[in-house]
Length: 385
Length: 222
Image (cartoon, rainbow over all chains, first blue to last red; front, side, top):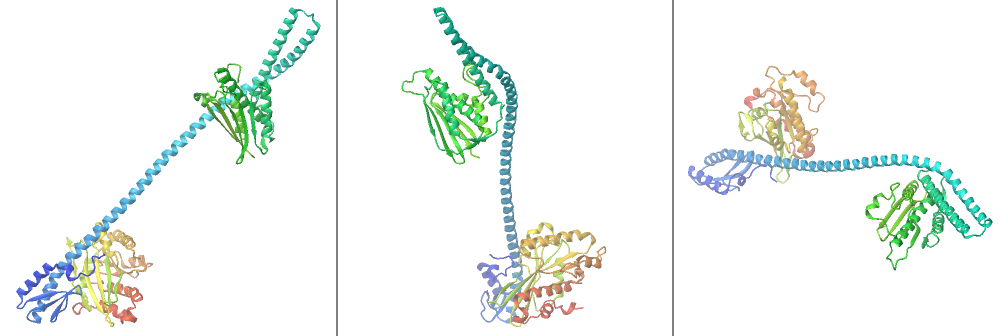
C-alpha cells in the first residue's frame, strides 16, 4: 500500500495529457522544443522535487533555457505535490477513521449481544429461583400440614391401640366361649341358629378389630412413631413375606409371579420396608379385584408381577399389576395423605404416602406409571450404602 | 520506521514535531528552513492552513551524502495541534524515527501540554511505536512571553525522564530551534547508527551527522 508520504513519481504527479500540455507550453516559451520525461536523454536537466529527481527536461536551445524551464516545472510541481499529499493524507485518515468506527461498531455490537445474552440468562435464572422458592414454600406448607396431621394420627393411634388390643383378645376368648357353650347347650334348632349367628357376630367383630389394628399400624408407620434402628435387610426376603401375607389375606387365589434377582443386602428399616411392600401389593390386589368386579373380561386373568434386580449402584424393585389402573386426572394426587379412591372405611389413604416417605427415608425414588383399564407399574429404586 | 533501500543506497528518516495547538511547531519548521544550510534542503511545504493553524501538516526535506554514496534524507513534519485533527496526527506520526515535542511555556498552557503528551503516548502506541526507544527531544517554547513557568521548575519536573535536559526556545525569534534540533539529531543518530551502521559502513560519524544536517547558514550563524 502506498503511504501518503511516499515520494511521488512523475506519473503520480502528472497524467500523460497534462505532461503533453506542459511540454507544448514550455516549447512555445522556448526557442526550441522542450520535453519533460521520466528518462534521461542528454543534454538534459534533472527535475528535482523534495531532493528527489522525478524526471528529466531535455531540448531547448541552451542550458539557460533548460534550467529556467526546469525551475518553472519544479515550481509547478510543488503545488501539484502539495495537493497530492493533502489528498492522500485525507484519504488515509478517512480510511483509518472509517476502519476505527467500524471496529467500534463491531465491538459495540458484540457487547450488545453479550448484554442481551446476560439479560436473557438473568431472566432465566430469576424464573428458576422463583420456581425454587415456590416449590420450597409449597413443601414447607405441605410438611407443616403433614406434621400436624401426623401428630394427630399418632395421638389417635396411641389411644386406640390399647382398647383395640383388649377388644381383639376378648373377642378371641368370646369365640372360645361360644364353642364351649355349643357343647353344653341342648341341641335345638333355636340354639343352633343362635350359636351360629353368635359365632358370625364374633367373627365379623374380630375382622373389624383386625382392620382397625391395621389402620392403627399404618398410622403409626406414617407418623413414624416407632423409629427402630436401621439394619442390613434382604429385600427379597422382605418382599416374599409381604407376598405371603397378602396371599393369606386374599385366600391364596391371587396369581403373584415373583422374579427375584440376586441382591446385595441393603441398610434399611425392615418393618417400614415390609409395610411399604405390603401396601403396594395390596393396592395391586385391590386393582385386580376392581377390574374383576367391573366384569366383561373373558380372556383376562389378574396377575401381579414382582421383580427385583441390581441396577447400577442400587436395587430396582418393580410391582406391576394388570388391574384397572389409575385415572389420568388422579395421578397428581395419589401420594397425597388421606387421598383414597376406595369406599369409606376400606382404605386410609395412607398406603402410598407411607410408601413414598419410606422410600425417601432410604434416599430412593418411587415412580408410578399407570393407565386406566390396563394396569399399574410401581418402580422403586433404593441406593445401596 | 527508517526507510532503507540498499539497492538505491538510500535511507529516509522521519522526524515529527508534535505538541499542543499553537505551541509553535510550524514556527520551528519555518525557522529551521531559513536558519539551516545543510548539504541539501528541499522546499518547505506548508499545506493548507486556516487562520494560521495547520490543517494537514508541514514538511521540510533535508539531506546528506555519505562517503559510501549513501543518500540520507531527513523529512521533518509537523502535525496539526488542534484536538479534532487526531487522525491526521496519527497518520503523520506513523513510521516516525524521531519526535520533537514542542510544549508551550506559558503557565496557563501546562494542562494542554500534558494532554498533548498523553495523546502522543497514546498515538505512538496505536501506530506501533515505543516512546521509550524512540528518539525524542522536548522543547519548551515561547520563553520570550511573560507568565512562563520558570526553567528551573520545568527542568526539575522532567529531570527523571529520558528526555532531560529540556530545551528552552523562542522559536518566533529563532532562539533554541537549532539547539533542539541538534539534541534530536544526536539521539536519532544513536538509534540509526546501531541499526544501519552509519559510521562503520557509510563513514558518517555522530559529529558529521549532527553538524552537516544542522549547519547554520552564513547569514544567521550569529
